[in-house]
Length: 363
Ligand SMILES: Nc1ncnc2c1ncn2[C@@H]1O[C@H](COP(=O)(O)OP(=O)(O)O)[C@@H](O)[C@H]1O
Ligand SMILES: [Mg+2]
Image (tube, rainbow, N blue to C red):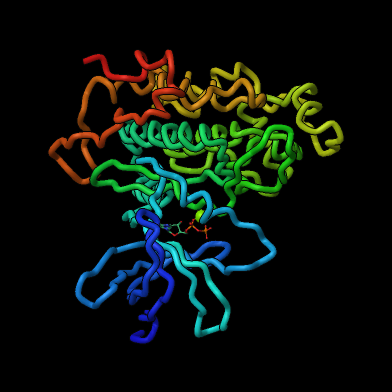
């Protein structure tokens, strides 16, 4: 056990804030994540063995691979309360395999939304509706900012969303698949984790927009409501079948505009009787009429019909957050103030535009 956590000197530690590069000692003490491309450890940094900075979550990804990651590029410019903050970055040669690793030292949050959802579900409890509103709102606010910069996250799911259940703060993380989308430039369609893939991606659309992230937001909101993934396809093509079970079959026009050469299954026969509204009500009953209304607007086949982040923020589902400024964190019997939700920057105010009166609390 004792040698599992490392201590090493990094020569080129750059502060993302000041851009100053200097040598620092890195002390790792706990592994907190293991993903597709690397590991995440908790660590402290010190320039002089006297002042200690951290704890940080340091994500290590192999540098110089064929796979083009824009993660550092994007994290360097992103500056928003609902996007994880990059504090330092450096490269270091791993003593185990002699390969160069990019190290991204980010602010550290105690949990992921995945863990929080599982915690409630495994105790057969429902996440309080207030928490679902709080978290969904902050995902939408983070997206409003990212999408305003043209950045599409492309891997929205509960394990890529960090939360602090004590303060109610939420931050989007893992920009390993993110990309700045340019108009009329195709992008690969095989992104996003299966359960969270928008229908246009499933049928192979390469001209998708940031609206694929909005689908992901709907899936995450639904998952908070029912304690498990909403659409759990057993294999990639069956993912569309799961979606059809709730939304009804996709129409031909949608398939044609997504990918005219799609030749996979269409699930064109309805897989349920009764209305789509009744399906949503049955599935997501405890969301209340406003929650169901929002979810039905977000989880639609046509990407252009899904609401933009600013429309989501303005939705009456979040009026509670505008009216009552407190919540009960998990395990607390005393109410606590909500984190800042309306401290909009210039760019956010610009995007929100004429919806400001609906988004902002009235006093
Ligand atoms: N800033 C952070 N604070 C706390 N935990 C984090 C942080 N960043 C990542 N993690 C943890 O590490 C896991 C993997 O990180 P992520 O960036 O999603 O990498 P991957 O691309 O490998 O999925 C996350 O699911 C989360 O559990
Ligand atoms: Mg991840």
